[in-house]
Every structure is written in structure tokens, then in C-alpha cells.
Image (cartoon, rainbow, N blue to C red):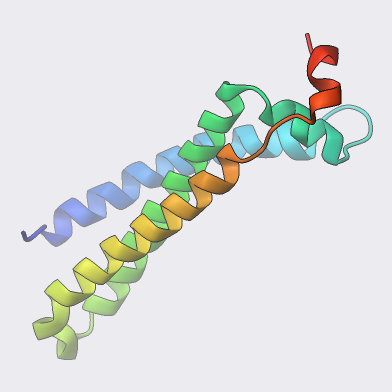
Length: 120
């Protein structure tokens, strides 16, 4: 399987659009809320599947953008031309491992049992 540099470039640009959308949402909600921000508010927000989905999409956008950028920079060097396919598969494996690990971490956030009834 071979993907052209044009497709990788387009994928990186699409992931940049996702980064702008999801990172802006994350910054506004997580870092600039009214009042005091502490871990209990983060846990409350992460109890809702919508926020978990937004964080997973942010993770995916960041990883796609980083991995495609890394691949394009490394393969831009003429001397690595014969290793291009190996580097491509290494990038895919790196993305997959990081995405699974990050997704498991995001999905692990749960409300403590004593506060479940306090959230509307």
C-alpha cells in the first residue's frame, strides 16, 4: 500500500482543521471556565460522553497531524527513499499505539460512586 505525498499533505491539512476546532473548544472549556478550576470539575465534565468524544477527536487530530508531519519531514531527505515504506508502517504503528493508549486513558475517567447522584 502506497500513499502519495499529496494525500499525506491533504490529510495533514484536514487534521489541522480538526486541531483548530477541537483545541479551541478544549481551551475555552477546560482552561477558561468561570470560577475556580480543579480536578473535580474535570471529572464532572469527563462524565459526559460528548466531552469524551471531543477529547478523543482532539487526540486523533493531534496524532494524525504529528505523525504525518514527522513522516513528511523524515522522508523529505533523499537518503531515506528506500526506507519510505518501513517508515510509513512505523508511523501507522506509532499512531495506533498512541491512539489506543490515549483513548483508554480518556475513557477511564469515571465519577466517584458517591457523586453520581449529585450530577444532573
